[in-house]
Image (tube, rainbow, N blue to C red; front, top):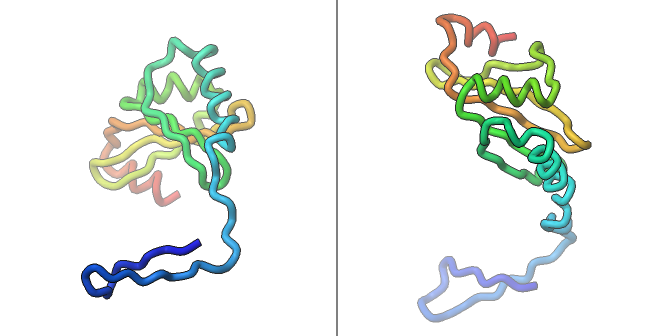
Length: 130
């Protein structure tokens, strides 16, 4: 494989650089199949839950992010996924804070976040410090 490095080259000229070494294979869409299968099951089982902003990440295996706009929507999803209330974290700083919890559904890691949280004065610092 060669990569053209355009920096510090006179206009119109090209320099070719060889890339050597072993690089791990890039993840492919098929590697994320378990997440999409879990998402299909979530839709079938919990289609009545509030709509969410969904993300699929490839770091540390595939992870599904379920991002919700309100604490009430977060609570509905937390209950459906059987996440213990004690495991919910209040994160953020000053006026920008959110709820966060991790779950596993059908073997897939899920990160649940709920935005629109207004933390009582002093509570956020306590939650983050713990």
